[in-house]
Length: 87
Image 1 (cartoon, rainbow, N blue to C red):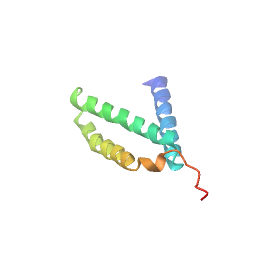
Image 2: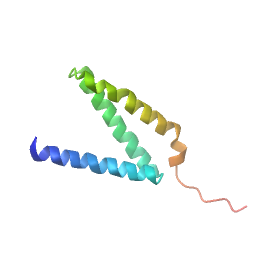
Image 3: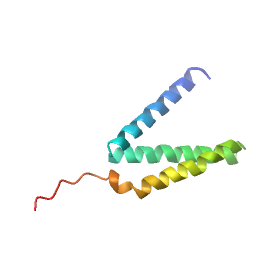
Image 4: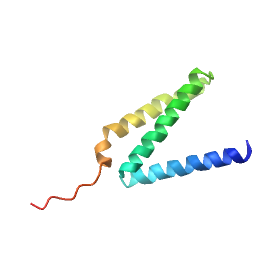
């Protein structure tokens, strides 16, 4: 696999770390980064399962789906911060 595999996995590592940091701080960009990464993973698992006949990747489908559903359900926690009302 060589150098390209190391570069690709390094990019995945940075993207996951950025999503984790954004979610930890409840930032809007972290929410969308996590949704994007999980969506790409979901598409990749689906492709591998049905086109390449890698049935082991089917375990990733419910996991990614549940994580995306959880984030959608709690999306208001990651919205833009509003200043407190002074009334």
